[in-house]
Amino acid sequence: MAQANDKYLQIISDIKKGELKPVYLLMGDESYYIDSITDAIVENALDESERDFNQTIIYGLDAEISSLINTAKRYPMMAARQLVVLKEGQMFGDIDDLILYVEQYQPSTVFVINYKGGVIKNKKLISAIEKIGAVYEFKKLYENQIPKFITDYLHNYSLTIEAKAVSMIADYIGNDLNRIAGELEKLRIVIGVGKEVTAQLVEEHIGISKDYNNFEFLSAVINRDLYKVNSIIKYFESNPKNNSIIPTISILFNFFSNLLLVYYAPDKTDMGLVKELNLKTAYQLKDYKVAKLNYNVFKCVDIIALLRDYDAKSKGVGVSTSTTDASLLRELTYKIMH
Image (tube, rainbow, N blue to C red):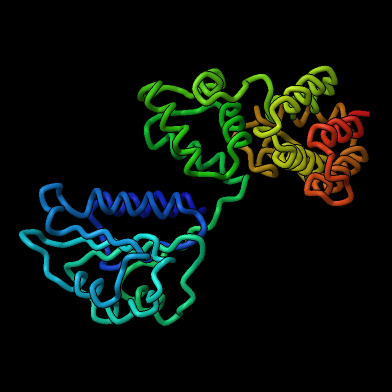
């Protein structure tokens, strides 16, 4: 199944080719994709000289159904098409009545409906739009999908990024795509075309420490480097707003779950493990080879159980409200490494 980002890239590609549909319904919880697709349609549907008379942008709170339909039904002036965009459609009280337009749409109009923070539940309206146009729902990306979003975004501008830099950005920002895109734009402008985004550049221009982050923390745990683990926890403790324990636990859980797969993989050759763990190269196995020396299979099972327990504690289950993320992480890593 194609990921949301793959679907998004294909939609943008079609729009840039001029393959526009009469009606678009863009909805869901991920506003980044909704806004970006709308911006692409606005940029490509009309020439700049055509926009004064043929582009109308209306906000849901200000929209009135009869006026909106009349606007969408009118003919373009000195252009092949007109563009009508309904933004913040979730604020439009008569959204279901748009079926009156969709069932008798104007072929020379591109009508875009933005609906954020949820989905339209009127199946008749959805079905009517699908017959003549396109309906896209965008959900929030999962944490494990964020690295691909970062690499795809930069690849679109002929830029590459090292693995550590990807991890730093993903761990620090989470799945706030608008914020990630803003930071990547900053990097793109600074370093130019055809370059590689490094951890050093991320530290300099986004403000994420290249030495004190979840990427380095995981590495310290893998190598049983107690001094480095405690140094990073101390740094996290001094910057609590930017260093939640939740992504740290998630990264540890993903790694040790994969390590368990390494122990039980039917094909333990490098190529077999690359396939089992869905890695790109055998080089990425180096951390698992080190971890196998430091954590046997029984300890690995215990660690996964610990991580489940502390994930619940990080969300307030069975702990005092005064318990800090740093104290939980210090306790957790002591149990992992001893």
